[in-house]
Image: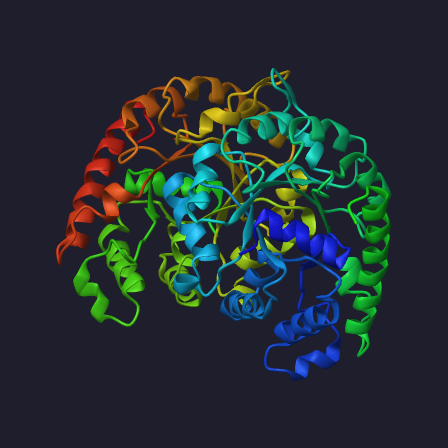
Length: 277
Length: 277
């Protein structure tokens, strides 16, 4: 469990607001790992060992584990168990369902005694409204990270629909701000549109934003910080593929560290620029 | 795999458009089942044995299995394997993510060789747009069931936002109709607002609608049919709790059959009224 204040402290100490996405695809990891009982777990452990001083969060993407059935779920549970406690553990699950079903998903990802997993935070889709979000808040100290503006092509289909409340993604931020404060609620905001962060900061001045799209998807860290950084940082920038697949041989963990280090150093500069460190 | 035509044939033969939701909560099933290795699987098998001539679809809700970790996933896989092939098998997962992640979720629920599960259909959340939907269509003959208008209180938060394209849920139907036809795409439409079906039929005249909310959530079958039934039926009405938890002792399967039978008989009347049988 990491409070907002602890997260901010770690960001200052590590000079980093990097989140590493563990989108671990068994078909993409180095071949030599297949000699291990659980190649995905072995890959994740080595990535974590090589990067944990450079990042403040890890974010396994549930889909990449679910795709392998029971074996994959076991990899996810064992990966969760291996995550360092000083990093925010985020399950990227993008769930969203009615209240009694959300209770069950909260069990799946927050209740370690029931499922083997007790993540600090979960990504949630807003389409079904408040009862798809609020059940997760029953777990004291846990975070919800609500989809607002995502980074892929499909984000244009509905998130920019113009409504009485502004774009749909703006309506999502406005409404959800009445459900929880910046100590429990973050938003997913893609890095692909730097200027959009200025609009978002008007609606969510204090919330942490989880920002995918830097790296493989082409977003710029400098742009994101220019419009999105706050006095307490307020950003977790995620990178997945460009770090974890930086090399495809025995050197993969070292190569991942190099990529993470580059991002961490760029982040340290941004933190200095914003006078946070 | 069930084509649209096969589904319609089964509806006519069974005089039913009932979908039974397997939202099986290990804490709610009869106590005597806990003597079995997998009480949830045993419960599901008995419900299926008792009802399969009365319904045309089964819909396990992923959350109720995920909440129990690896054991729960094994119950889900074994339940999938037990489902009768003449019923549409729907996994109620409400996934929605960017393209490369959607590929993984499609693997998880459609690719039996990889995950142990090869459902006919999956429920999907539309918030992230086309690349969160289209990857599932690569699996020939499989169905996507997109959330449009859901049945719980939270549905009012965003689905009724007024946009240039009508309410958000109407914009979802209009846009998604350009991605797939009525042979591959259904919509979730809650039973709680009967008259709304008339509006939906203007936008989706031929698509099957998966209708939760009859039973425990208070929706009326007659209302739904009045506004939503088509010449080929076009409805799958789901009931979960009111069937599977009809009794809490040794008679539970028999009691579930009685509840399912009542709904099936009411459906037969509606099919006759609409001159489908």
